Image 1: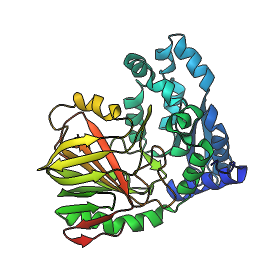
Image 2: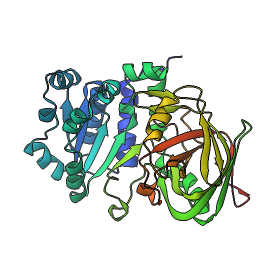
Image 3: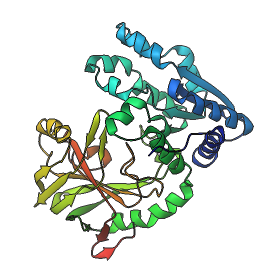
Image 4: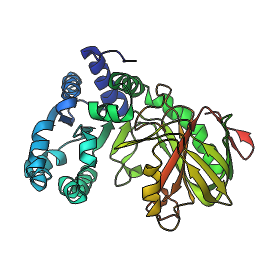
Amino acid sequence: MSGPAVTETTRADLARSVLTRNLKLRRGERLIVEAWTHTLPWATAFLREARRLGASPMVVYDDEHGYWDAVEAGEAKAVGTIGRQEWAALRASDVYVHMWGPGDRLRLNALPDKTQKDLFGWNERWYAVANAAKLRGARLEIGRPYPSLAAAYGVDEAAWTDQLVRATLVDPTRLARAAAPIATALSKGSRLRIRHPNGTDLTVGLAHRAVRQYTASPRPASRLGRYDRLMTVPGGVVGTSLDESVADGTFVANRTNYFDDGIATGGVFHFRHGKLTERSFDVGAERFDRPYAKGGKGRDRPGMLRIGLNPELHNTPQVEDIERGAVMVSVGGNKYAGGRNTSSFFGFAICAGGSVEIDGRPVPI
């Protein structure tokens, strides 16, 4: 089923919501909006709304066709080189809005590793400059829907876009209120049990580690890590790294795993004494198995737990773990999130609509 067409009014409402509620754009501040061919109508809306708020916006634009023309001509390194004028603009800005580009992620994902490295060699420096400038930024999932990716996922692009619009418009203060009690329970608990009538009954360990709340709400600069300058919008998830030695039971997915090149469905994980002992998928098992074979020590240990909060999502591509009531369990590396597992592997499954208990007490999700 196709979703409703996006109107100028919808774009204006979304732009105003992100600028005022997520980014707290103030009069006189300088804003950069990064746009691609498929997101230019959204960028135009942000430009108009920023001016109405009294800010000074500019759009940095890249053309999809020109991008791929240069890449195919062997000019990836030139494409991936940012000029001094753009670095200067970044240093002089207060707020940044990013929308995914290029749009054809399937084509991007199929490029050789060296080509991708040439295209994105600027990434580390970008974050260094953004952090020095104390930039406030948002990465908008509204830039994800694209014809080739929608076809690979088997979803309707308009319906996908509609879900993202509605989820983006959810007030971040509402999400923050929902996240707070869950975060407190996760930080204090020792054992978490997930159950669902589909056969899920899994107990994992909580290690009293930092709990992160991604509610698309502005955070003080002192609480931002190196790669936290761009908040994900829509938001709505609470997460923590798991005790790598505790996991017993079965976890049955009822949500799709969306990757940059396709999907996996029907995931089933079996754990015993803190290890993944069996796993299976109805579709897309190779997307788990290939990297798992190279994952090294720790690839079979519990990694991360995430609980979704956003009421406007349902099995939505690339934000499947943000849906309200969705519980994601991963295996493999979690060092980046305060854990101890340094494995290069990250595999996951998501079950929504079940129940969660922490130390025997129900946690409303």
